[in-house]
Length: 207
Image (cartoon, rainbow, N blue to C red):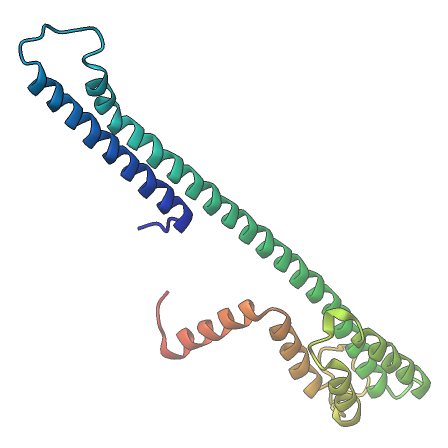
């Protein structure tokens, strides 16, 4: 049953009580008139209370419609606000993932320079400084990215076996773990979907 707000319930209760009082009063007056003057011929206006009693069901429907309309308007407003919040969240997530792609590109460049026998150390340090600056973006504020970048720079010494490798996807080790971690932190819904997908594959559960 849909939730109806307390104020609206009280409004209907007051209306029903008021209507019952009028109904009781009109019935009593009608009976008293009949007892006082059983032989009196019908007079103009004798049926006014009966007419009012006949309107009560329509007034009740009008009151119910008023309450339902108010309830529906509030529910629509809630849905609208939720939709706008979801849309804003998706836009923020997309912006963060685009920014993370730039970090990934820089990390691959840094690792390529680190592994190249021809690249200068100065160039690697410049890239690392750029990455530190990128990690200070408010988008990455909750990721602890600066400290984790520092760990990558100190510990990721993995290079492709071919020292003349031109494929930057083959360089690096723990940096890829951190990139996936950051992606999951920025897009937890996608992370949950991936976990469920892996569980289904593991137990061979059909969708």
